[in-house]
Image (cartoon, rainbow, N blue to C red):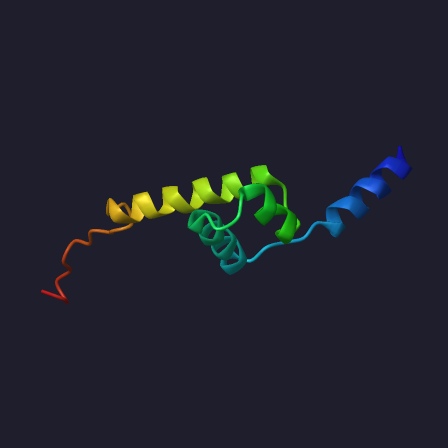
Length: 81
């Protein structure tokens, strides 16, 4: 079992971590439609399902933002009124 744990740890450490900017760039490239998602994924070294997950997250965040979900209503305080 220890050998399996070592292999699992190596695989986990070898994963590439993408910044938010990289994810946005990839999703926008996919939305442009100049290349297929398969080609885009090959070029970026990612799985196609990862593109679709990022795309869904990106669009959901935009939808929430446009709906005003992030607005925080604050009650007036005596010092501000």
